[in-house]
Image (cartoon, rainbow, N blue to C red; front, side, top):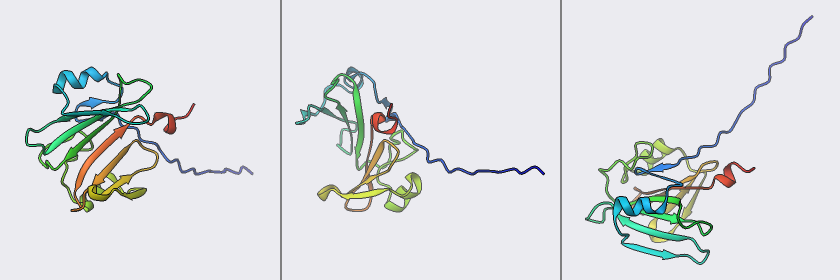
Length: 156
């Protein structure tokens, strides 16, 4: 008599995204400046991280923020596209800003956690990935951010 045993496993995948609005995590800082000109705002956080913000639309309805990690401020560590412009494809899952919560959840899935971020609305986080969303106080998608948390997702 031969007995076969079948085991079923459920794998939980990790998703890692590198692109947003035509830029990639890991690109040189100069790439943003060469493509977009001078930033409209920049600064340094207490932890040594640096950020630069650029306008994507002259009417300020769309902007992009790059962060650079303290360990190497010449390499893009995170990219965030924010604003109220609902006509521009931001280059991430065919999303446009301004879609409502229901459409946002259909496109991105149910968030793992939701954090109140005051006047900005809510931050939606997703486990086992490297992106987060912001939904403003009017219930509209207002920001998408990708960051290089590869050390957390894929530890050595």
